[in-house]
Image (tube, rainbow over all chains, first blue to last red; front, side):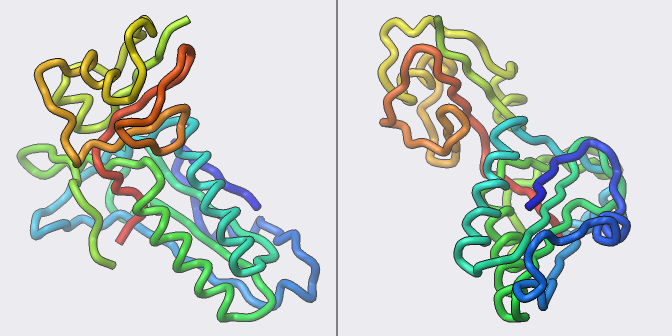
Length: 143
Length: 79
């Protein structure tokens, strides 16, 4: 049931390989995961770098609340959320969400819930560096 | 004791500071805190608020020792 906010670059595949879901085997029949990467294009403009700001303390708390909601609602065996902050460049992994449950439906639905709710509720803010200026991202992409 | 105020992201850049310590005297709600933080600016609907790291509304009570935060809509995740 790990939630982590990291200023260091992370490798989502290595994180997954190293993570042992803690649930009983009978409750760990399926894993669903989502990985989000930084793109080099947003709203038609080239993006060369990005700064991801957060609210230390509240961000972790919001992610833990989301995880607890997902675990309760879908009876998850385990869940993992890792989110990057600080300076990023295109192709960097931004976020990893994984959910383990007895069956695929719960895992897939919980994974979707976690990434969508994270985008709306966890205090993160993106500032993009374009070729000639910087701008704050004012709203989420529709998906 | 006092009230700790934190401001984030584009709101911090626009207001020109990242927060302050306020004496609790005369402060009853989140809206009262905003009036001290940005006296010239009405509290816009796009500004999100938190008290002690939980989302809050403008009329929520604020007590001595609380941490109150103001920030723009959140944009985490990716893709």
